[in-house]
Image 1: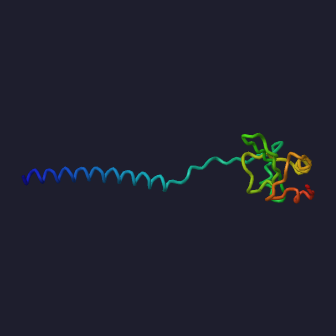
Image 2: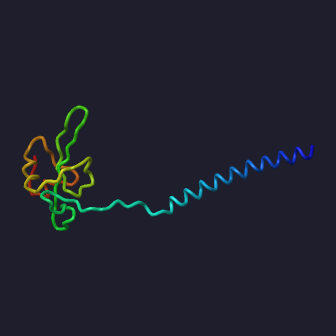
Image 3: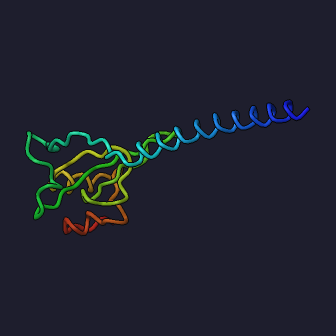
Amino acid sequence: MILAHLDERLTENETVRIYLHLQRKAVQAALTQAEAPPARRPSRPVKGAKGLPALAQAPNRIGFVVQQKRTPMGPEPALIHVSDCTKIQGTPHRIRADEARAALTDPNIEPCGFCRPDTELGIDVA
């Protein structure tokens, strides 16, 4: 009976040893992954219209973007934003200042209420 008890304890310990070994390997893999430097995507300069650098890269120039809003009920009025506005959603399209000015005269296009491109352009949209 003593030998049976000892064999049972050895079996239990072997199961625990295998389990702890698997856990140790999983922890090592997680630590290796966490300590690895993040994969870097190659950066390339963003090009604007006609191959010029994007407006965001030119510090003294203010750029504008138009944001189309589509819903299940159909398109909503487009929004004009200053290019660095934090309220831009989706994929905006860069436009020049004269295009933004002309667009804001269209009743189906509205200025962003947060970044106020109409104020930046010096026009009053009523």
